[in-house]
Image 1 (cartoon, one colour):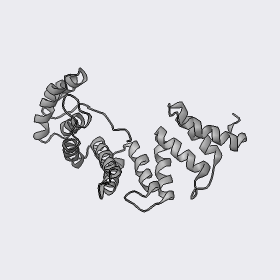
Image 2: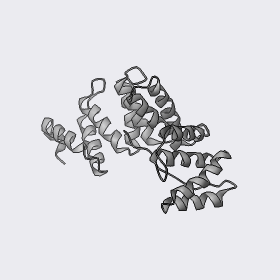
Image 3: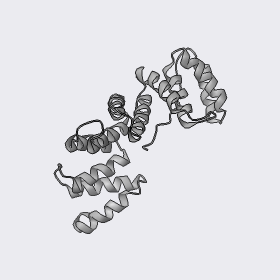
Image 4: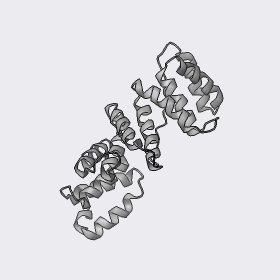
Length: 212
């Protein structure tokens, strides 16, 4: 499954002292103590606290992992405009789609689109994957390419690999081996090891591209 975003953050709400202490407790491994505070604030409607409660349940920090509970709290935060909650909620719906739950991919698409509006770069890549694989949407390689390219420009290393593959071998995209090479090099520099395999293939097929 694609990575979740872990970001506790601080808050400027009226309960900021309690919230900030809970963040410190969480970072020190005092998960239950942190959860108790976040939960109280979340029940009062604090969006960031709602996200943090979801995060703790999603990752099983100090409690048994509970995806349903996590999704409930992520959704509350997501509806208040927390981009990371929107993205993580989409990730969990994507996972449900992989497990065969009806309409889960459509829900993932909805929340990826919301996360994109909140500048979550990983959401571009994952929404593109839905279009590439026709999950919850009609297959649209051109739309997928646009989204991969946007994410790659924002520095998402997974998207850099994906857009490079499309530049080199995509069916509905004008091939550009040099741009494929440049994106694979960026992804490799960022630690994306799978870029190496594609880079080797590209250099074998078009050696001139790889002559720095």
